Length: 266
Image (cartoon, rainbow, N blue to C red; front, side, top):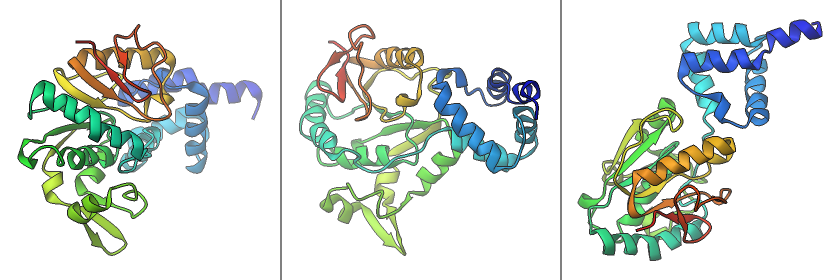
């Protein structure tokens, strides 16, 4: 393959536009080196040469299309990930929100992946509120992971961080897997949502979006943080992941409570 032909065959600018037209996923918002490497690996795995042929295959093959979207949306999640942060949520943030706003809290789990985080939120809130007063709005770009979330079946590894009393109360062992209880599942409403394109819901007391934005460019991150700030009520919190920090938190409208919790000023 000549250098010129290879450049045409692997024209990433063409590919980004084609993918946006096809999926409305804006690859410009992701760190290019990391994302391009992931995509090239997937194309090679499918034994397809070049972006143009791969786009044509995505248009004609539903399974290939779903594999691509699933691969693109990085789905690494587990219950009570970084347990110290969840302890802080339990001991300080939730009590503060209940004291300030009462029992009917509006909570959004954004980029919720396979449901580990919204279900963790239900269990955490169940220590403070009656189940029938808990409602979590959970969104993700990928309908396949939402389907997995709704099924609510997990490996032993993914639930390792769940406190023993909650594990006993809300999980049933089925073969090698663990099934989350219907009592928890029915407190979560799942919807498809693209953080880079879709309108953001408003008037939330707590937004949880963890270990997703590290894959975004700085410009895309800033845009998402500003939108989250507008989605929160004054005094509401944004809970982010251990790999993320909002360096310019004042610029995007937040006060820093600690490394993982940022508050919209009252």
